[in-house]
Amino acid sequence: MKNMTKLLAAICAIILAAAALGCSSNVPPNTVFSIDDLPGKVIGVQLGTTGDIYASEYEEPEDPNVPASKIERFKKGSEAVMALKQGKVDCVIIDSEPAKAFVAKNKDLKILDEPFAEEEYAICIAKDKTELKEKINAALAELKADGTLDNIIKNYIGDDTKGKYPYVSPEGIERSNGTLDMATNAAFEPYEYYENDKIVGIDVDLAQAIADKLGMELVINDMDFDAIIAAVQSGKADIGVAGMTITEDRLKSVDFTEPYTKAKQVIIVRAN
Image 1: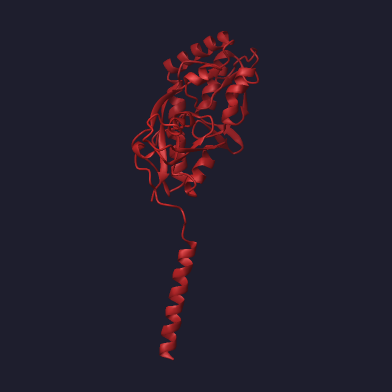
Image 2: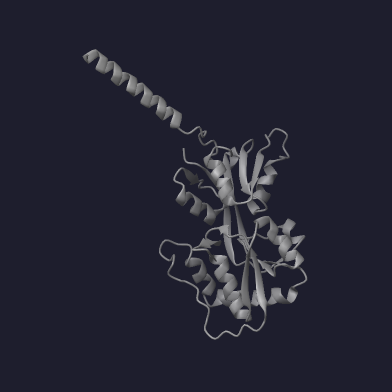
């Protein structure tokens, strides 16, 4: 009887071990430890973003001895991150602040210490709206000078300042100058994202502060990131505010205001 008990215990141990193996992840280990490891890898990006633009250079390397990378493009950054978790891509190139938000919610991911690229964000606007551009630049200058812009950013970024500097529109603003239609992609925390069914974030507060300065009513239109420039170019939106970097390619279609903040592209990898 004792031998039978030992045999049953051994069988149970084998079954439990097999079950554990069956439930274990098939996700491959991390293979990207620096920028130097990107050639030949599968890179995830959000379609139309700066990360997409930069990563494209790895698809067709100038040096024939450097292996080409495969770029997987997703409508949302969250979809690229999910593909990374599932092992469908080797890494994700994305803006630093959204990357921090994704990693904070996914302990199996991490951000490489080495930044991929540094950049500046600006508001995109149609080339023929020079007067509006000048007014927005003037409003931006005032918001920078009086500290409002810094407080808007600090309200969303910073362990010691987050949530302590909410932007509130001044009372008694006369909004007789029409609407300011803003195109954005509300899946880019902390710049624009949904909270209690409302779009909030740095870019939203910034646009609201500009609308307050201009005496306009802010209207926010959520859309795919790669549709924003077309919306601005066609006049469906007055401005595009979505953590957007000035690039030569984008300048062919739209214009940009003065930059309002600096940012950087980073690489997210699996933590294992």
